[in-house]
Length: 228
Image: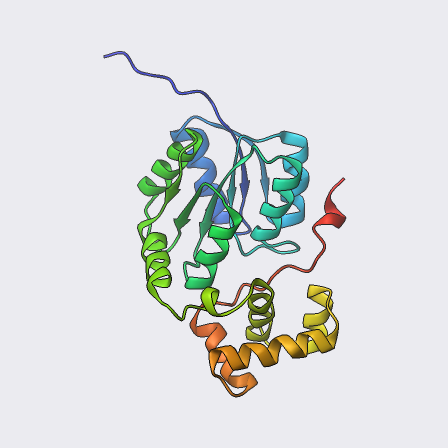
């Protein structure tokens, strides 16, 4: 039987764990026969490499130094919206799933529950221009959608940003700096969050944030600073 040769895809790997980068490189280059045009261990380097290498696909971790994966997505949407993005993360909690939905990437693979075979299937699917989201991702999404009191229904986007930073134990001054708000505005958001969620203290907010996965804080507003 004649073997069908698929077009070579240019891939940029963005992952801060060296061992997992090696796995990704082997899967993409040796098993799927694609071209690795660059590797980055932090978000800022990833954006720079995307500018110089023009990848077709970015394999993107979310927890990265300097600029997190969501910041990378935001930057790539501005400089090269045609690039396909497949997220690979060990975090598949409610908030991460929600933010991935908002980022409008083409796929998500859960590092904790998915196999290398699933990874290969996801890469092949996204390379073909189709979406691929892991079963864990879809289950978490479905559960949140069915919950009438889920955080995304109760809180605004800015309130979620504030809650995530409260959950990461940042003081109001640091939250104001990161979100480019006044301290008074942050205090107002905090009061509204407590009221909407029927909570009573900062400790309650921290516990709620961590219970729902609001642990990946929004990046500081510095995406524009790294773009040409």
